[in-house]
Image 1 (cartoon, rainbow, N blue to C red):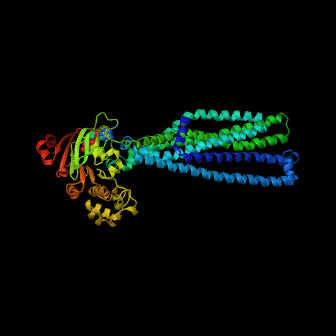
Image 2 (cartoon, protein in one colour; image 1 turned 135 degrees about the vertical axis):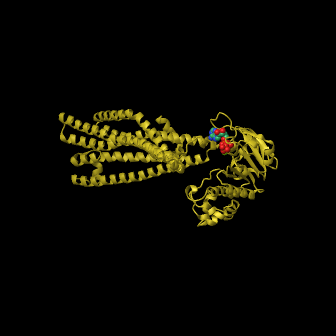
Length: 595
Ligand SMILES: Nc1ncnc2c1ncn2[C@@H]1O[C@H](COP(=O)(O)OP(=O)(O)OP(=O)(O)O)[C@@H](O)[C@H]1O
Ligand SMILES: [Mg+2]
């Protein structure tokens, strides 16, 4: 499982990221080499200072020293100390630089991944969102992307780095004393290996629990704040707070486990290393070796242990973190590949079928079944929506009106049949098709910004066309509201638009749709939240738009659709009648029943 996750982690990286990672890896090797040198030079220095004659006469070092005019033990001490300081300066300056590059890399990957994931979600097929909880998507785009870059990638690099470091130190020790080193490595290695094995499943388990808890926390906050009004009246705040607290506790348990695991490794290794070292010294003493030998052994292995312990510690920590967080890679990888696959589906060339000049949208034998649903919500639907007309869809609740609207918006793709507009199948060129549509949903979503920014949603303020904005406000009959606001269109309407009424909100939705200068305006239950007087204003606003625009509306209220040029009666996903309000009222039993 771990190896598969590592493979997936690599797949998440771009070619450039991989190249950068390779460079980082090389830098890391240099860093590890410098660390090994750092470990070696101090005992070397101690030996040289303790027995200067040996160094001065040695066949390797002697000529170098005499070439540098180093002849006394005093010279050795001074020059050696200076050299040592230089070595440590270089090593540590390099280490700072390396860590900077490392942090940059990790955070660049975080930004890239987050962007890829979020942009994938924003562009994913509508049905993707029907099947997914938004709290999970929030978690993946923010926290999981961070965990993949910070914990997984970082652990991966640290794992390799410390493995190299451990091997380097081991090689050095082996060269100094093969027997003792072999014994030490086997001993420490089995302690480390055993503890990793024992912890394995619990690490994976806690990682999974943490991930679930992160989602549950977001969900509790989102749902609690999202439904605050209903929840307050019902007095159920406690349930959401409890859900949040329970998730928080579960998350904390995972993190405590991770933290304790990280800190528990060190004492274990330290105890083993110190005990081992001192036992060896005693053994040497018993063997009758001289003090100088024991001191040089202790200084080499002591320093090595001091560097080896954190390396081993970090190695094990990285290993466990990888295991703990590997699931985050799975989540991100699955969503990224899923959305990549689905983004390539358009562009199949369909035979161009012409619609008559006066038809704006034509449904031809369209059927649609929701993913996982047993029965189709729209069946063999064929109808023509005429250009410049106001067309209404009526029918009982659950009959399929919203589904029809979502089909013609191109949000849902029918399993059979075709939806044609001027220029052919709408799915052959969705962006172009959508640019011609203005859509007013039942619940108008407001961002926490000004009225103007809400109407020109997602358009940078400097690019907003003042003339079009004004026209949209006029056509949506929002002029009175704008006049009454303290700073006109620059008034903040607040998060969730708490400072404007339901009817005003609907008209902001219309203005938003109109700002894009659509040729087709689609309204789904846009009047159901309005009182009679406001509805009348609304219908008037729509009437004012008649002629230039093709208008499609779904409405429960008969007063809203009375003035429609044509009504379609939908029952159980099928077309059950067509005509003007009067025609249907005179001849259609189903319609009479609804009225
Ligand atoms: N995401 C979904 N997954 C499965 N079934 C769905 C989904 N959305 C809607 N349906 C089903 O499809 C049918 C039509 O739903 P639709 O929302 O289109 O009805 P509607 O006519 O707009 O109703 P209303 O007037 O109440 O808004 C219903 O039976 C509904 O249960
Ligand atoms: Mg509906």
